[in-house]
Image (cartoon, rainbow, N blue to C red; front, side):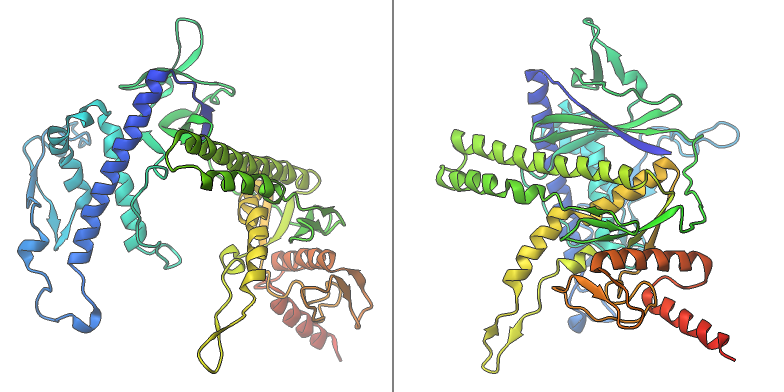
Length: 473
């Protein structure tokens, strides 16, 4: 099992200078290595309609320029065979180009020695911290070029600005790096930086080993995040059979943040909306200051801390709400919301003369801001984490149609977004629209665990009609 524990660092001024310098050097190295990868990626590609079928578009000499064909191993490998001998030995030759593709990670890792010769300041950085920068570039390019399990890839990688590269990692730390100094204060011993005091507010659990450590820069200072692991603790998802008594359905919305199937209405906290006026005043003052002046930097720091406060308020409230919702049930049914679709821009409308017509985007922008403030995606992640931690279960239901059907008879009752009351002409149900959705989500969830392929309103309706037809003589 892997977990992450985060602690606040209390560095001295000398430590702060070193960390800031390392972050800047790591950022420059990241951008340089990413540029190498992108330049090679673009040089070897051409539009499909102009691509010849029998020859390369770019000369081979240009594709592989400055890339050695072979690399020589400088020391014995760590992996050993059954007799205890190294599998790879010092002096072995390994190819840098396999089937026409450059093994960029190994090429760039080997080039770090040349980087330290050209730029001696990089000798002050720990070697593994510098190697981790190359691995970050490799991960970024893999996300760009290789599809995930859903067949999707991330966008084109971007170069990191000064305020967008805020961490560096030690891939190999251990519990021995957590020590007490001469004054009895807990410190973390970071190689080539020294002992940095930190707030050791919760001890690392017994049996867990520290694997990595990441120094993170935030608005209010520096933090360190430890990745800890205990291989003896399995990561298991509890299989609990839901019933009407041990489960509840939840409908998420903006009028009420959450409405449960047991009749609880939870109001929207609106943390960003409540701080929006104060934030706008600070930003107006910032716009009047000369850029990069001392007053400008002070205001930038205040704005960053205010954003951090809003995010922390929201996160704390969501965790407390998650524990509250799980206090009396073991299974929770929630909608499988696609947040990216909810905040998507409205499609443009064109008139007969080619001019753009009003498409409601100004109103949708306000709705998008409220959706981002509610942070439903983050809340669902927190619910899943809390469920795993408490040994409980989350079941997702297709949200399509959950507001347009009656929970009792499953008949369709069309409603616009402004209609907040559910009135069913078939069975006579009269209740709040969101409460009806929560009851319907629970009903679909219970059916999905008892029958096959019943995960949405449409399949539940079809199953109900099929059952009624079988019951007729």
